[in-house]
Amino acid sequence: MEYVILLAIAVAFLVFKDRPVMVLTFEKGELTGSKGQIPTGFLRGCKDIAHKEPFSGKIKVYKNRFTTKLVFSKSIPAKVKQRIHNVFPHASSTKKRGRRA
Image 1 (tube, rainbow, N blue to C red):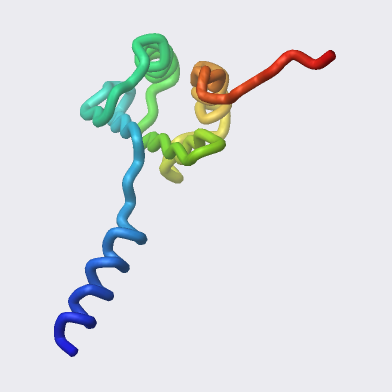
Image 2 (spheres, rainbow, N blue to C red; image 1 turned 135 degrees about the vertical axis):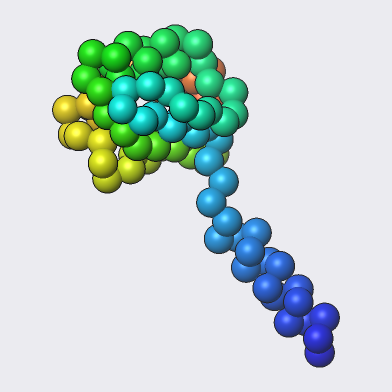
């Protein structure tokens, strides 16, 4: 009976654990931490945006089978969020696109 409870706790931990693909941490317009493989163009663009309009907060990138999602901390202004969305490389070669006749 103990093993079943431990197994249930382990499965719940794995399911609900926050696992972003990339994390960027900014403080007062400076990049203080990064995690994951960040495309150089996106990193450069985020640094430029932070330099021009200093902000503090985290940007997390999640990826599932079909989409890539950007999640921002509440301290990042809406104007900066939109600029970062514009810099993010949305197009990926994972989708299978065929020609239409």
